[in-house]
Length: 187
Ligand SMILES: [Ca+2]
Ligand SMILES: [Ca+2]
Image 1: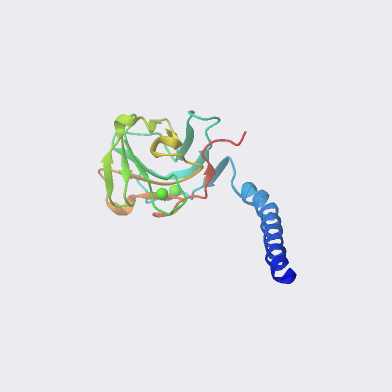
Image 2 (image 1 turned 90 degrees about the vertical axis):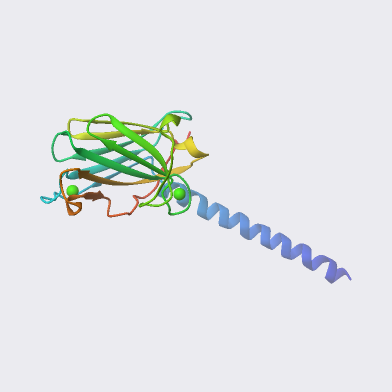
């Protein structure tokens, strides 16, 4: 009886030690893998109607402040240019928000079901604000807009309404997300 009583206790202690050791080993590396900013340079694409040259994501500095996505273009914005930004706010691989911006400061925000299907128009919730000015499209994003968000990623597409579909440009790649950035800078 002494052996049978003591054995589960020893196993439990061993399991607890293993969990503790694993936690110590994995937590710092997981934190280090998520930055507060990422920048992607994008190649010059002569066939693109509104060429993307770089994409930067930044964390929001504190709760209830905005994260910032900056898309730099090869030229200044003109009437007819469009920038679409899909945002992934959680741990799965599907977009949650679709922000569609058109020529300077017109934009709408939708819940995203996929890269090809929008859900409800939630423009009135102020999840995102967009400005297209000079050579930049800037999206200011509230990461917690649809629920708590620890990390986010984006996928960006540019186009023009007078150019064929093949003249689009994507960053970091077609229907692909960037690596994740903290939604809010760790304290
Ligand atoms: Ca490009
Ligand atoms: Ca998602």
